[in-house]
Length: 259
Image (cartoon, rainbow, N blue to C red; front, side, top):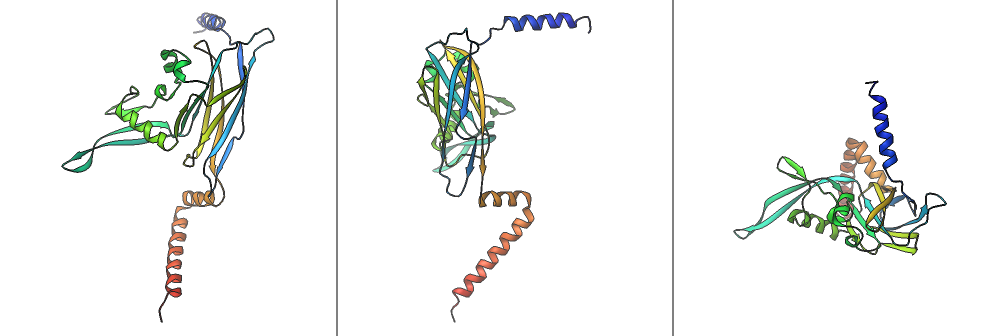
C-alpha cells in the first residue's frame, strides 16, 4: 500500500491541476435567516441579495450571466392516490409513494430555465422542477420518472396549488450586470424545519460556480409551547387537555342551566 501511495498522490494532483478554476465567485446575503410562525402568520417574503465577483484582480467579468436560486425545505415521504369512478362510486385504484421529496421547492431564475442551459446540463444540475429528482417507490424499486408521468404531474400540481412548489423565470432580477436580488415567497402553509438555498451561476449555457445559504422556519410564542408540550410531555398534555374539556363542559352546564 505504501509503495502505491506516491502513484495515487500523483493522480490526485494531476486531476486537481487539470480541473479549471472558476474565474468568478458568488457572495450572497439573505434578508432573514429565521422565520417565526405565530398565530397570525400568513406567509413571509424574503430577499436574497448577491454579487458576482472575480476570484482575482486579473479576472474580467462577463456581461451575460444567468442565475438560478433553488430553495428546498425539509424532506418527507408522501403517498398519492389515483381515483376512478367504479359503478358510480369514486374509489382508489392506484397509489404511488414519493420518498424523501422536498416539502417546499422554489426555483427562481432571471429567465426561463429552458433558455439558460442545454437539457442535459439542466438535468445534471437539477435545475427546474421538471429536472429535480422526485423519487417514487414503484413496487420494489425506487427511482425518478419522466416529467410527464401522471403521478409526478399530479403531485407537482397539488403542491403548486398550496404554494409549496413554485418556479418563476422572473424571480431573479439583475440590478447591475453583477448585482442581483431574488424574491423568495413562503406561503402560510410552509412547513417548519431547515431550508437549503443553492445559488448557481451560468454563462453561455455552462455552470460557472455555485454557493449556498440556509434559513430556518420555526414555531414561536404560545403555539411553540403547545407543540413542545405535546411532543415532550405527551401524557401530561393529554391529561391537561381532558381536564380542560371536562371543566369547559361543567362551566357550560352551570351557565346555561335552567332552574
